[in-house]
Length: 257
Ligand SMILES: Nc1ncnc2c1ncn2[C@@H]1O[C@H](COP(=O)(O)OP(=O)(O)OP(=O)(O)O)[C@@H](O)[C@H]1O
Ligand SMILES: [Mg+2]
Image 1 (cartoon, rainbow, N blue to C red):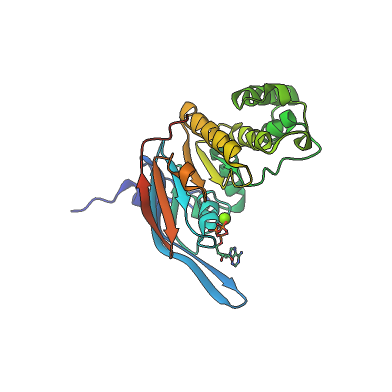
Image 2 (cartoon, protein in one colour):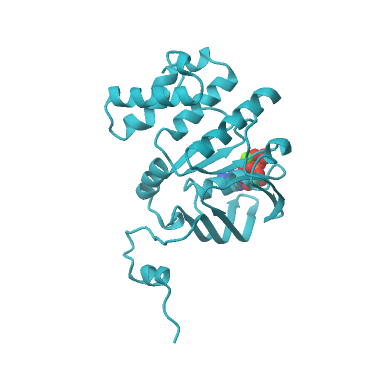
């Protein structure tokens, strides 16, 4: 007789208020994902029956033409947007089942986000910006600033802590954004064109830094990029095209130069 898998049993007994959990080696496991936007001109289906597995410790690049849904996919993985169908296990939690409040707590504790634009708060210093997620979690200002100072050291900006974002270069702003993304020690780093606004040299340096932090903090990272040279430094390159993810390249784990 077939036994009920533990995940299915857990799901069957789960109260509607509890997030769905399961034990797996994969940090991300997406099954049968569909995303359809209902726009004024009719439905727009970006993907249907999309599967994706990302193992703990992987550094995966997602490439693809503009408008294929890379950002949308990242938002769904990071519990910022809901799928139309399918399951999205991220850090053992089906993020598609989370309430808005649970999703916010999940994002704060499990995920670090970096965007193309840094979104640092202009009126605060670099150190205060990095400390912000800790203050939001209730840490004292003194504790939060001390942790932020350590993170600024990790990203090579220990001497820029009192600069406001407007007093930093583009690469430095992105380093601060990276420190802020990681200050809560997330397991997963999601980065949407993190170097898209930088010149080639600076982009390479920031990408290297991401690779170093990925390795030294045991992160699992997913990076969307249009830069194939940078993508090739990742352990896997996936191409999103026509609603399907295909393996574009595999290589050694990101080796910062
Ligand atoms: N809220 C929305 N409602 C309707 N359509 C949307 C919405 N958000 C995004 N889209 C559409 O979904 C498609 C995919 O958008 P997305 O931002 O995920 O693309 P992308 O692959 O990240 O593109 P780029 O490389 O330019 O950043 C686009 O055609 C976009 O117009
Ligand atoms: Mg995008």
